[in-house]
Length: 115
Image 1 (cartoon, rainbow, N blue to C red):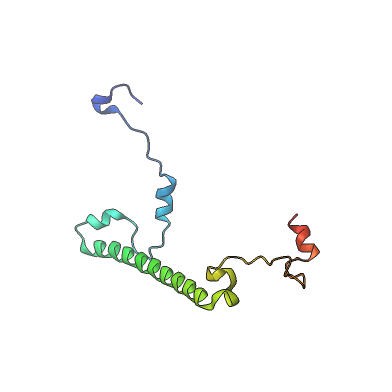
Image 2: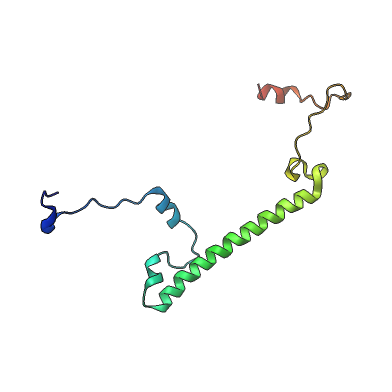
């Protein structure tokens, strides 16, 4: 590096991509361009390619969200008898006084693992 900044000899440090930039570049674009500068290009085909990539990513995330929501609703409708804690109900710990058959006691090997 030179001491003369105003003389045009200064060269700044090389830009290093942060981890968030690297992660955003890894998002699926389904074969469309990842270069955001194409959105401001004078070529309309390049603009359309980048916009199509954004729409494809949005549709992918929307389908995932809808699938996730339907799965939660199905578990909720199934109830705690069929889906257990997945239905949103808390774990039921049996009362030792009412546990005649010793249902609340786990097998020895399970208790040993959790020690």
